[in-house]
Image 1 (tube, helix red, strand yellow):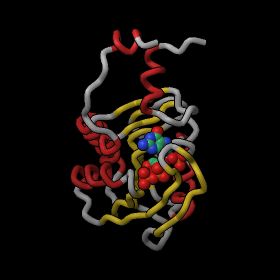
Image 2 (spheres, protein in one colour):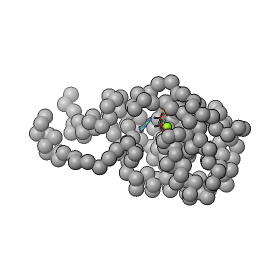
Image 3 (cartoon, helix red, strand yellow):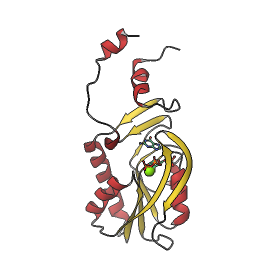
Image 4 (cartoon, helix red, strand yellow):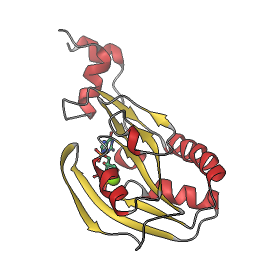
Length: 175
Ligand SMILES: O=P(O)(O)OC[C@H]1O[C@H](OP(=O)(O)OP(=O)(O)O)[C@H](O)[C@@H]1O
Ligand SMILES: Nc1nc2[nH]cnc2c(=O)[nH]1
Ligand SMILES: [Mg+2]
């Protein structure tokens, strides 16, 4: 099957073939979505504190902490991916003691739900919030803003940089 121009362009970015589409997110878009998340979470608080899942949850957690006036921030350090390749989740640092009641867990996204499962098991009563969710991980999240398909790779602003983009006509000419 001849790939369409969008897929060719996407393959330049998403290197793992199971991610057929890419979804680049700008700083402005992330900020807007994180603030939308804050509006929803403000209804559900007050929160004792935020547990950010490093590293991806750190930026959304900072935005939520500012909007929700939360100053007590902890981290749980989990690593599940090497670039776009999934492997066993590694717990590098545990969060606060307790069952997490009244706490907000924040991550940038849930994909397969593997990372979320590790953290939920540690803090079963905490509220789990992400900015983005893919269908497989969605049941593990209490509140999220934007859903993207399972075969999409999200590129966050810290993953990408502004650079020259070849005009579509030139990309097509090379095929
Ligand atoms: O639902 P899952 O399939 O577990 O994927 C989601 C997790 O993957 C990414 O983290 P990653 O392990 O890449 O580490 P990072 O946050 O340090 O980039 C992302 O920030 C989520 O934490
Ligand atoms: N940046 C990024 N990290 C992920 N970890 C699991 N899925 C994703 C994704 O779509 N984008
Ligand atoms: Mg992460």
